Length: 311
Image 1 (tube, rainbow, N blue to C red):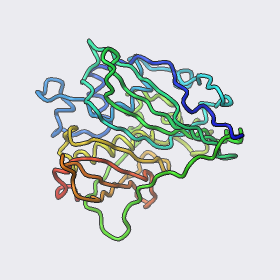
Image 2: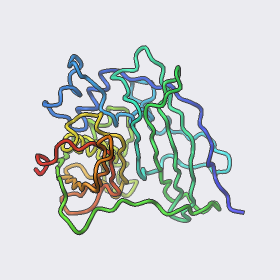
Image 3: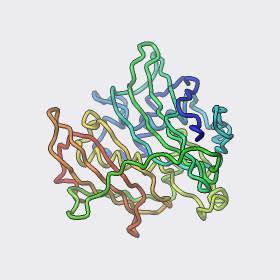
Image 4: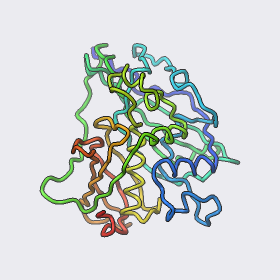
């Protein structure tokens, strides 16, 4: 009989807190610019949290202080699974569904992170893939604001007798036509040093020795930096920098990004908008050498401007 792993296991709910200062820092760290003061100025009449900030909260939880990244990630024992080493885990992909905007601060509210395992797949010698769904919930009303669907790859930790899992759903970039929009992001040595202050303090993104130990040759940039910065670029280029125009966003972490890499995103519109004006776009992100760093990119959004995006 195949071991089904920990599918269905629910972690204890975790309280979440954030401040307007966190909203400002996040927007700065993912490339918001001076013409987007609604993300950067707390007294702006339309001041709001950039929607993908939700990806930070599972790291930050309630603390404003620097944390021991590995100690904070000590694994909760999951029935049906062997112990998994959280020091050897890489992000697979993230998929966010925005159901209701999070406020610019949690002050005066009670939010929780409610996470369950939706699948655990044994890939043999390469490792184990764990799929999760984390809901950011108003604990007093039970209303879900954001769904976070993620996968984590536990390197070299397979072979425990589990199912190999289903094939992934892919959203490949069209090969037969030019993109409808492109935009670029020039990273530098400070990119991960600033981004980590949001609450993602993995030493891999600042300590060269840790990067060497994990066979990356040195520091690599957070996968979620590239993921979030691309979300910002997409919303600015096609969505008028208005979070109301972004309903879903996802992509897969394909290869590491090194400080100094220039990332170029190509975007294709794939069909007619629905009755509410939302449509599917697909995208991919490559570095200056043409290597794909984010694949399987897909968003459901209102496109309100793409002509200006061909930079």
